[in-house]
Amino acid sequence: MKLELLKKKINKKKIFITGNTGFVGSWLSIMLTFFGAKILGFSLKKKDKKFISNHVQFKKNIQTIYSDINLIDKYKKSIKKFNPQIVIHLASQPLVLESYKNTKKTFLTNIMGTVSLFETLKEIKSIKKIIIFTSDKVYRNLNGKILNENSSLGGIDPYSSSKSCQDIITTTYKSSIYKKKIEIIILRAGNIIGGGDWNKYRIIPDIFRCLYSFKKIQIRNPNAIRPWQHIFEILNFFNLAIIKKTKNSNEPEIFNIAPNLKSNIKVIKLVSLIKKIGSYRKLKVIIKKKKQYESSILRLSSLNAKRKINYKPKLNLENTIKLTVNWYDAYYKKKDMYNYSLKQLKDYFNN
Ligand SMILES: NC(=O)c1ccc[n+]([C@@H]2O[C@H](COP(=O)([O-])OP(=O)(O)OC[C@H]3O[C@@H](n4cnc5c(N)ncnc54)[C@H](O)[C@@H]3O)[C@@H](O)[C@H]2O)c1
Image (tube, rainbow, N blue to C red; front, side, top):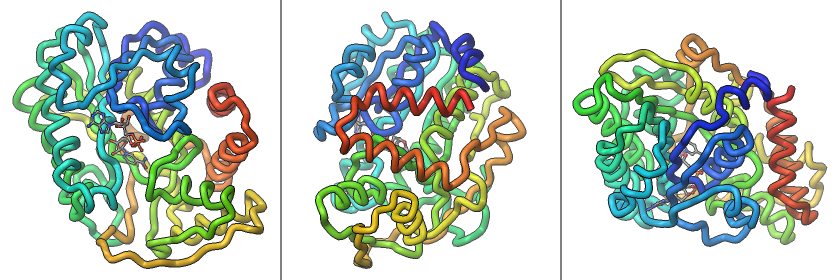
């Protein structure tokens, strides 16, 4: 869908987003605000100043309630007053390694946080649609098999298991409480890359932090294969999910979002492509295998999204990497990253 049409369809929509200060949520907030939507966010503040949600323009354009998701009920009045039509739930502890260190906190945020959200939303009558972002890690690891929306759930590490629970809880609220009153969509996507991610233990921010501080990058899981996709493809999905009406039944509509099969490559191959495309001759890699379990192959089919909402990935792997490399280079050249990010977004939706 082209830029002008998107603006027409999304203009003036009132959207409540949890987790809007993070990597995915900040891009989503910037894009939807640009399309004319009114956003109310609910998140913890990102401590790292490099996150774009700490940019003065972001704070000026996007109203955010800074609090813990498990305290959301205290803010019910303000959320009600905002009159949201759509809710997008992203607030989570999203890192596998962190979930080994802080297992209870991960479960509290990801599982009970989702319950707290649904309990608060029960009393907000303006809501027509809720979109919950779980993960491709919700599936039982069936090493190599292509997973569709009916594949068995059962994440093994604490993060994956918490996202499986989030997914099941969402189905329970839809089937037993909201039923046909509210449309509910679950998005399960694989590894997202792109500018603006400054989280720990993630390959892209690790690469750029090391590159620009002349350190060697340590790789934990060189042979793990992942479906790498650019954040803009995920934003493209969100636009379709916001605009299009899905089935009206007692079950949520579930969509896997995956890139073309050629974008399923090993971590080590991704690093070497970044090195080549960015001409980073000085980037040095060391392999440091880790003890904790992480799934080795995840392959997803997004046929359901293609059939039902006409979702198609636009970017090949090379362009995905180019957009990512260009964003971090611009950051380290001290460009104004709010405007730079907006320009990348406009170019993506104009092409
Ligand atoms: N980035 C990926 O590759 C990827 C892939 C699949 C799914 N996801 C899902 O997308 C969502 C966003 O991930 P991200 O990559 O942007 O991570 P992120 O860490 O950058 O953002 C997480 C957001 O959740 C908020 N949050 C965390 N704990 C909270 C709490 N207790 N109370 C309120 N807010 C809290 C943070 O403040 C932040 O706004 C998560 O649900 C994640 O599981 C991400």
